[in-house]
Image (cartoon, rainbow, N blue to C red):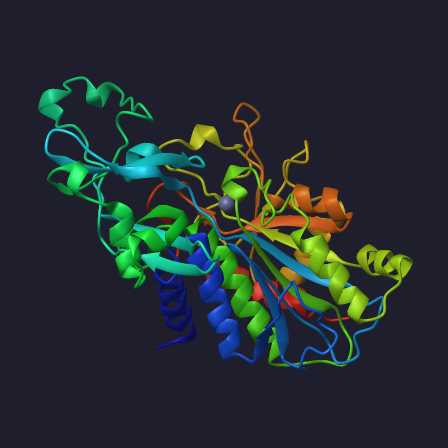
Length: 429
Ligand code: ZN
């Protein structure tokens, strides 16, 4: 296999190991362990932490990992790759075992902003974490288990003139037939984790599409999978961090992978980008390097954050939704995302940093800016800039069908993003 096929196979494996943000954080941790990183506990002192290739912290569905040069000092700046581990879908409600008319169904809430119709008629799984009364956490996943069945066209003659889905009535998945009063969904999940239903005191369980990633198209250039937004960035950042840590230098910045949870909800949580997580970790890294408050700010003044999140490629059937002069294509390289109203944090200095980073990595990139009549999304970039005062550039892999249960990108763009992140972590001076 060539390097591109290797990257794609590794990315596919990462996607399949990561049906929920909790699984994504665990998979990042597993790969870091395998590459010489040491996990640290937030509730313990790090003063006596063993020397390692790098260190990391997992907080719920988020993970922050870092690798520092041999000569790291109190004012050593950070190079941070920000991304998010969560994706839109559906989340299990309390008393989740419901049903009617002989069907077993799962009570779910809508998580984030899924493209709802794309979740119909797919074999979905449940994945996430169970927590016991004692506070022990168990990851669990079902494999193909449930489906949101669409109404037949014969019973909905107007459906092709516009599909309307009521979020309470029409999006409830089925997972079998029988009497709901005799079934117990939580007991099933508990059994998969080797627990009894009575052991489970709480859960965060979400849906995920179970179809494996696929490569297709005339030149095998198209790549489809669930959760490309935003595991394409988490995986690219992780690969770049591991690569950087394999070549430790005496000087240079501290490389940080910050993979937050809850971006799809607006990032306002203790593991989200609006919370204190990154600030907490950077402060502790600085403390362990003996940084005073003003030395920490000196380090921040020279630091950069690359906020990587999937963006929109031009859709051939809806080109009018794009800015006519900026129409990113699949395979054209990662996006530099720009917005006059700071929905993306990129400014002129950020654009220049991205240009020299991509030149160093020998990677092509393309600009994204919204059509003025189409409201722009946002991401963790502006939140990080606002919280920490660190310069931020917004970038990401171009997709079609963002927030679909199965999104579409080019086989080469995730790897190109990873190469650019590796150059960002190890800038040539
Ligand atoms: Zn995203």
